[in-house]
Length: 286
Image (cartoon, rainbow, N blue to C red; front, top):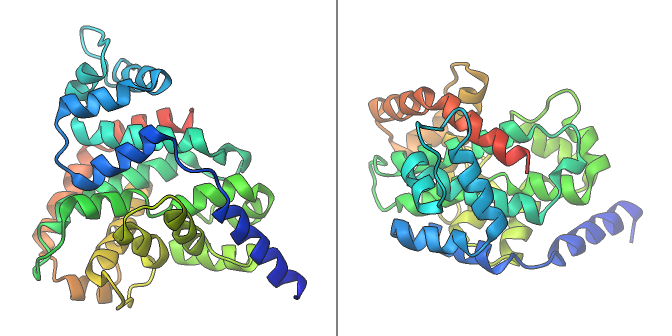
């Protein structure tokens, strides 16, 4: 086998051999996919992990979110931060603790977590407005939240190679980053995400989004969901950079999203930008 193919096969085996998610992370993923978890049930689940509990409560008490009084429980933190932010925050902290993306110094983790959380929020809101219907808002949220997970795992397993991929700030454009990852590692972060999704038994919809969200002309299984995740990825990156950008017309045309719905969802995220950045910094520091 040629050296390049042998190296690629070895990387795929390392991805397939990653240890399973901790039980609490696996349970949290199921709760996210279901989308109807009562606050008390989510609080009880997070509270089974003392370190996770401390981080979530700590975020709620930071200067940005802190109110007149400190909070001391996960349930109180949810009341202060909001259910959706705590769900994304908890999952991010669990995954961050399971992998070591800090090994790649060029990875902008603040950006990674911001665009992940904002992409998830946009996907949940816009799924309700897809004219052809049939999209589950919580499935869209989870797929968008996890879409770039392949970047995190490759930064853990291949930090030197990812340093070359991300050199010069190549993180904002998923298609460019995919091409560079393919060039330097023999497989792109989309394929890495798919392998990881299969290893961790993530929902099929999330796996498809990881693999194809940067392809505006994708027409395979779950094409509308994948297209929506791709649109939300572009919007989230633009919100981080505070620039105006329009997603690819092919994806927008298939989704038939009302412009007013996109503008409203983007504006709501823009108003919460500083809060999302504050939460992202907390996840990056873990």
